[in-house]
Image (spheres, rainbow, N blue to C red):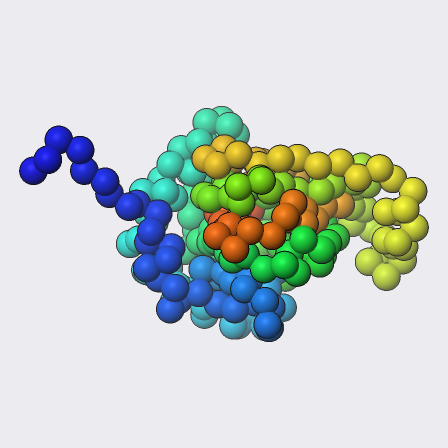
Amino acid sequence: MSEFVRIPVLDAIHANRHHWTSRIPQLPFYTLGVASYLDAEISKAHYYRSAHDSRPLLWETFGWLYEMVASALSTHFKQTVVYDPAYALPGFHIFLAHPAFIQAIAAVHWDAQHLALDWSSQTDFARPVSFTLPITLPSKGAGLNYWDYEWQPDVPADAVNLKQILSALPTHNIEYAVGEMVVHSGRLLHQIAPAHEYQPQDERITLQGHALLSQGDWKLYW
Ligand SMILES: [Fe+2]
């Protein structure tokens, strides 16, 4: 054996390309894994079934990554974290290069996907968490746009004039760094920031998840 060995750890994402789910017709945006904001929109039953079915492959392939994420978040929360098998494991957003991604095509939203799922009555909905762990980023970087406007659970979505809010408030941006997890409430208006440029070799792959404190544990899910 030679002194130096290269082991392509994250090639597992590409090696499992046949398990990627296309999420925007005509554009190279995929998920590896099951996302409540997408799959529970199809139906709750579809989400729970897909969450169950995808778990063995994801855990077998990325269990080491999930352990690291759990450890980091447990330290951050100062409480135990669990991957409750009822919910989908965190999964990956995968953007391959495309000129369209320079445009602001991603939805401006709050993270309200937990509303589409079933939770114990002992769940703290006042402190939701969303997290992003960049795995690989375009050469010019990538990040998140956000606006200082907080979700008000009592205000119905159709009573919110997004256009007016966005034109009145400055756009902030948080730049991602590979291997550095960004944790937030998901309750400020936000959006996947448009790509800075189009480079055919660029990829933007992030691990995505959410957490809710439920029955004494932070439950990590997607
Ligand atoms: Fe979000």
